[in-house]
Image 1: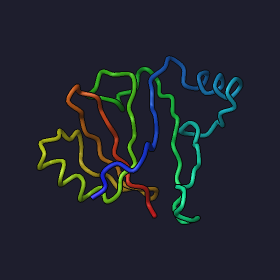
Image 2: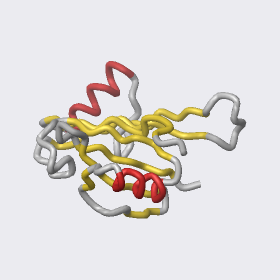
Image 3: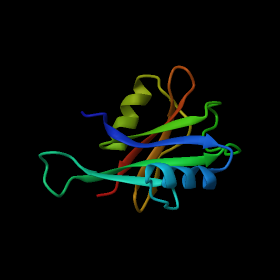
Length: 126
């Protein structure tokens, strides 16, 4: 079973997400979308059906979204079959922060690595 298939996003805390987004837009050409900037891509050799994106997203330094981690960042990993992977990770003793949530754009769950970094696992909707 494949576990991680790519990086779905890089999230980090900053004092002013709006100003941070404006700086990246002005100096590095990032787009300005609601959740940050999407970098669209297509997995080589798979045809037009396997498109995806990686999200760059600044969060307020006051956010609790990264809790219980005290770190200023969180990485979102793209996965296949999140439910099966979650079952395997539970058997391996991985710490889960929450339960799988399903939205129109995909499924999510949060885990902690051995140093307490919160990681977001994301199975995109088809």
